[in-house]
Amino acid sequence: MVATWLAPIMTAGARPQPASLARARRASAIKPAGATAQLLLALESRPQRFWSRREILAALPEKKSLNWSLRYCYAMGWIEHTQDARASRYLRYRITAPGMRALHE
Figure 1 (tube, one colour):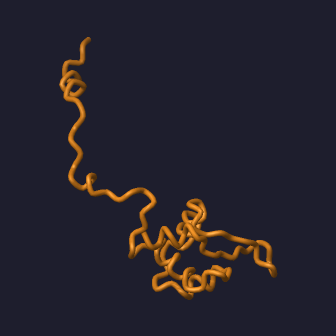
Figure 2 (tube, rainbow, N blue to C red; figure 1 turned 90 degrees about the vertical axis):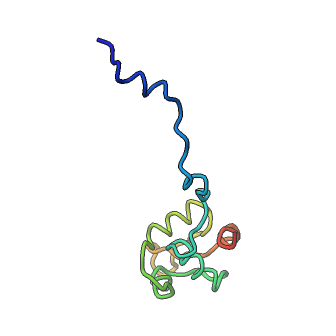
């Protein structure tokens, strides 16, 4: 049995992209009002210092998506972390030079 309904779909070729995709931001772009930007702005206020998660939460205007933002920024190389000297199961975070560049692009 031949699937005649499939032939027009296969021969139609690629569809044109919507205009919204033409204006799409690159994958590593930071939205100014997003949780990632808020995290980097908070860490940028004192870039030489390692911040605890509690200190970061206190500095954020909105307490949204902090865990995701920390993981994403670390994966992108925008922040670094170290173990807390008092309790090794906790991490402390600091912005890196690439993180500052990504914030101000």
